[in-house]
Image 1 (cartoon, rainbow, N blue to C red):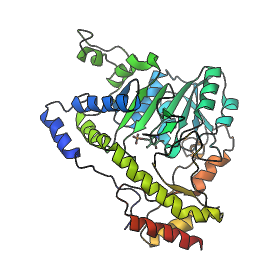
Image 2: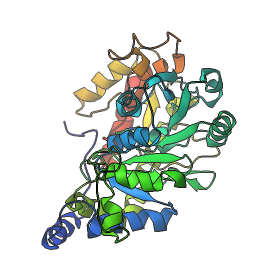
Image 3: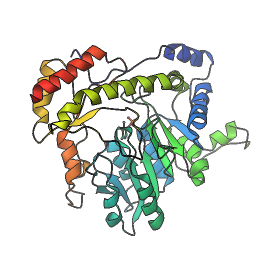
Length: 374
Ligand SMILES: *Cc1c(COP(=O)(O)O)cnc(C)c1O
């Protein structure tokens, strides 16, 4: 394929930082680069407390443990999302109550949440799709009224804001991903942001196999032992070294990605004006972190467009399949129809998007899409 969908970008410092981590003699978790990454997030974005994990999936699993999710608890999750958003809670015995997307963008329809709440509901998990914020004031108000936790799956939303508040700082807990398909990467990688203070101490314990080793290393206690359930959620410092090289470059990465996003938007605007496709809409309360560029095709057009682009060696890809219809969950779902989630499943197409995407190639992609619709 001449133009892939994604290509991991390296800033150039990754390998020298990894070498530094290796030479430091401490390559397991919570070494110098992990500390640097934690400080970066706390200083640049004002997060109260963050913990690197091996993935966003790990961070979601930690969230489910922290919330004490038990058999029969209900968790409200959008159907249009990655499996881990739901699976992390299913692992703890939760029943997932799937919510629909709204019709402006694939984010959870905030107005659809309240009727889904029962006496068993424990939490609302939101996903800021494509790095565009959900309607957080509305969602927080519903959660407060019913005494529910809010978890932000912020896997795609690094460096993006809701009404001036950084995404990942609004819910009780938030989870980030540094998988190679995200804006800032470490191969596999993730982070839990702990905004609700009451979870801070236990989060460290759960991440360290249920032990209070973190407090021991800080010299707060003189022995450490098994105090809770947990697992090994912390990444080796080698991975944090890679990530730190990326974080140091975040400004540059984000500027470049925003240029690419804007070029698609300007280039494809005409097709939207002619009602042939729809382009992403950014609500007034949200910023755009240029995580991805998607278009919404008309009914039954997407596969032909994918094929058309494939012939020109351009790889464009669809995204999630509604989880309420998945092989694993369809017979556990309560049967409600979720038309917007299904519509995004069927019509949303993601265009090649990566730091090194050349301007010429991008113009070619735009031309080919216009050619398809002419
Ligand atoms: C990428 C992604 C995940 C999973 O991230 P990993 O780091 O691969 O575990 C979860 N949720 C959403 C919305 C994602 O985009």
